[in-house]
Length: 69
Image (cartoon, rainbow, N blue to C red; front, side, top):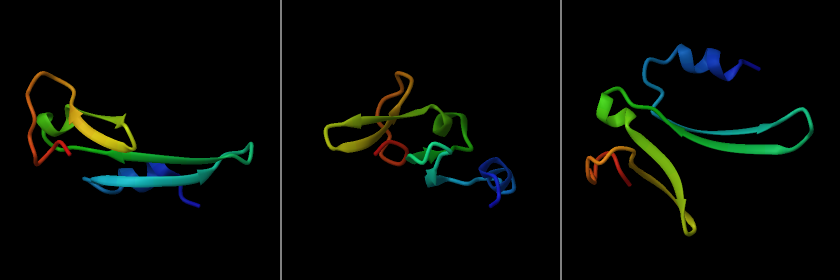
């Protein structure tokens, strides 16, 4: 299996992704990631709000519906 860093480094802009893997202990791990090209897009954080996952600004820039959902 190709290592994740190798797979992602070959893609200039991977965007968003979901990683599902089994670690050496046998446990299953699920991860969601997002990337950004512009400085504004890179200034985002993921956090859990209730039953959902929210993409929000990490700086005091205000809500941008194209980047924060």
